[in-house]
Image (cartoon, rainbow, N blue to C red; front, top):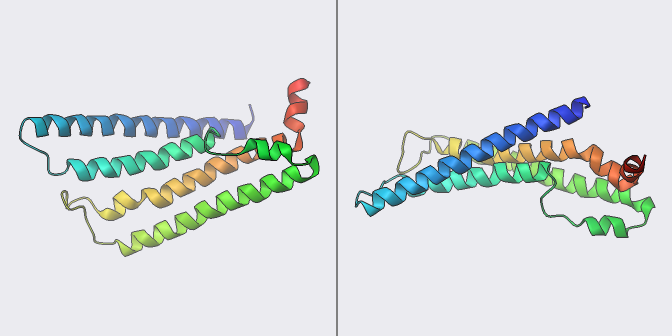
Length: 167
């Protein structure tokens, strides 16, 4: 196992753990919200916290999906292109995806600067900067996932992965 494989496996376990923690905590908050509402004592913070947790789950889950190469893609397009153009096409596609998420991270950071001092309405001790920090964090996690997959994607585009499987 190479250092890159080890780093990828560690990153995958980290994202899986965080994603599972977010799913479980969101489920607990939703169940508590339903129970308290049913009992006539609705929690004032339930909706706001659940929506923030869902956003966090979305960003971390998307990063995990990217690492597992389970996000939306068109692999048939790469196969349909003549072999000479496959690697350049993959490089352009990866540059566009990584570029988009770097821009998202940068503007996500700008949003955090703008939100300085704002807090959640139902929980004023939680800063909006914290809740919205998932935008740049999630974007950087997505970039890391793409970079960890890049060697394998390039091997597949060049046809070397197929050759290695047959050896």
